[in-house]
Length: 123
Image (cartoon, rainbow, N blue to C red):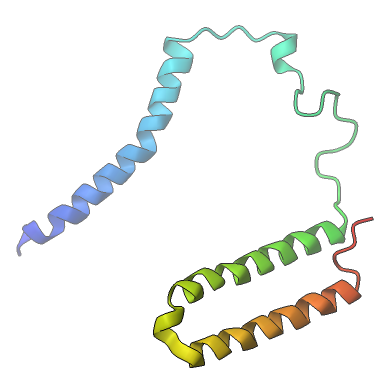
């Protein structure tokens, strides 16, 4: 059995593990050994919004929030298909052009449908 073929795989695994563990080790080194930890009330207070939390962190969100988030991801990914199409437009010719026009027409129909249904309204 020739182990020379597995050397790149072994090196890849070792480098990957090193890249994953090295930042953790450096963070621990700088925070616990070289750094000073003096927590006080100001450091431990909430700073994102400026006031104490008044509800449970596991409160229910409105479904519309998730709907808008999913629609954003959906249209963002569909628009991402336009970049490789635009780059290779000369090579794919008129068939590729009209295929993308059908794709965009379906995209516009879906967008108009959700607009008319009020899925994009944020109240």
